[in-house]
Amino acid sequence: MTSPGAARLKELDREHHLHPFTDFKALGEEGSRIIVDAEGVYIQDADGHRILDGMAGLWCVNLGYGRQELVDAASEQLTQLPYYNNFFKTTHPPAVELAETLCRLAPAHMNRVFFTGSGSEANDTVLRMVRRYWALKGQPEKQWIIGRENGYHGSTVAGMSLGGMAPMHEQGGPCVPGITHIRQPYWFGEGRDQTPEAFGRACAEALEARIQELGSDKVAAFIAEPVQGAGGAIIPPDSYWPAIKEVLERHQILLVVDEVICGFGRLGEWFGSVHYDLKPDLMPIAKGLSSGYLPIGGVLVGDRVAETLIDEGGEFYHGFTYSGHPVCAAVALKNLELMQAEGVVERVRDDLGPYLATRWKSLESHPLIGEARSLGLIGALEIVADKDSGKRFDKSLAVGNLCRDICFETGLVMRSVGDTMVISPPLVISHDEIDELVRLAREALDETLRRLTAQGVEITAAEEADA
Ligand SMILES: *Cc1c(COP(=O)(O)O)cnc(C)c1O
Image 1 (cartoon, rainbow, N blue to C red):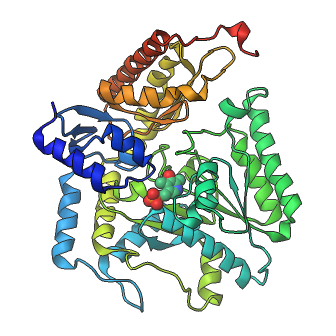
Image 2: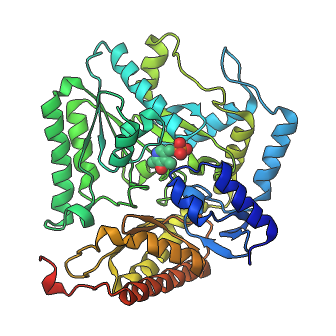
Image 3: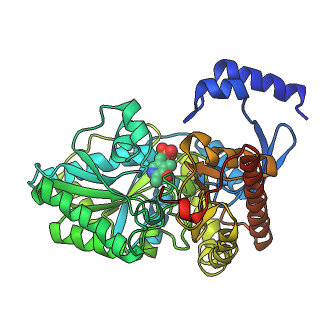
C-alpha cells in the first residue's frame, strides 16, 4: 500500500525531477519507485516492499547496506575536517592514507593515484593523461584511443566518447575526436558461428587491423573493461585478453583497464586486471571503492606513465574541487580496511563466486534462457525465443524490460540490457541469499514466459530459427 507521504513524493518527483538514463515522459506516466531503507542485501521501498538488491545499487554497494563503521568513518571525518582540497601543495590525512592503501592493493607496478569524484571523471582524467604522456615522450601524433563497441566508460563527454554506446553517441555528439571503437568480445551475441576461443582471437585481430589502418605511430591507448558491465556482463573468451595484450605490447600502445565495476573484488581479485593478468598503464576506479556510500573515484597510474608525468610534465592542468575529498576518502579507506579484515575478496574467489556459478547455471534449463554465465559475483542471463538457435524476441516486445519489471514485483532487482538480464549483488551476500536470488529470478522468468504466452507470442521451435 502506498502511504500518503509516498504518494506526495511520487507526485513531486514527477513534477520536478529529471532522472538519469530515463525516458522522462514514460516515467512521468508510470511514477517512480521510492527507496527509503536498506539493510544487508535488501532494499525497501516506500510501499513497504522488501527487495533483494541483485545489483548492489549500481554495481557499487559491495559491503552491503547499513554498515555502521562506514557511517562512523564519515561522521568522524566530517567533525574533524569536512573539506579541504589537494590543490596548491596541500593535502590531508585521509587522501594520503587512501592513496597508500590503494597502491598497496594494486598490481606492483602501480604506485600512484589521481583522485576524482566519479568513474566518468576518472575517464576524463585518463584521456588527458594518455595524450599528455605521448606528448611528453616526443610523440604527440600518438593521439588515437581505441575503445570497444558497447563498452561503458561513463557519461561525461569524454566518458561517453571513450565508451561505445551508440545511443549515447547519437544524443551527445559530436564525440571527442580521435577515439574509435572495435568489436566487443561478446561471444553469445556475436560469435556463436565460431568457438569462443577462435572468436576471442578474431576480436584481437580486429584490434590489430584497426591499428594498421590508423598507423601504430598514431595510436596512444586501448581502453576496455575486464568484463563489460553496463554492456551486459560480457565475459570475454579465455583467448581474448592474452591476444589483446600481445598486440598492444608489439605496437607500444598503452593499456587502460576500466576497473570501475571489476575493481574491489567483483571478479574474486582486488582488480579484474589481476584475474586476467593484465599489466595496465592506467586503471580508472570508482563505485566499489567506497561501496557507494559516498562518491569517489580515481585513476591508478603505472610507473612508466607516472614517472614521465612527474619527471618531465611540469604542472598538470587538471583536477576537481572534490578530488580526494576528505570525507569520501575516509569512507573509502574504512571500506578497504573492512574488506581486508573480513577477507571479502578471497571469499568471492573461493566460495561465493563458485557457489553462484553452479546455482546460476541451473537457470539455463529454463525455456527462455539461451545462456547463463557468471564470473565472481557478476552474472548474466540471455533471454531468447529459441533455446537452440539463440534467436531473440522481436525488439518491440522489450522482453528484458518486462522481465526486469516483473523481478521488482517478485522482490528482486535484476537489470536488463536489451534481452540480457544482469546481476551484480553485494559481495557480502550469503549462500541462502544466493539461493533466494536464483529462486526469485526463476519465478520472474516463469511469470515472463506466462505473460508472453498469454499475449500469444510464439516461443519459436528450433527448426524455424533461421527463417
Ligand atoms: C559506472 C561506470 C563508469 C562511470 O562511473 P560514474 O561514477 O557513474 O561516473 C565508468 N566506467 C565503468 C566501467 C562503469 O561501470
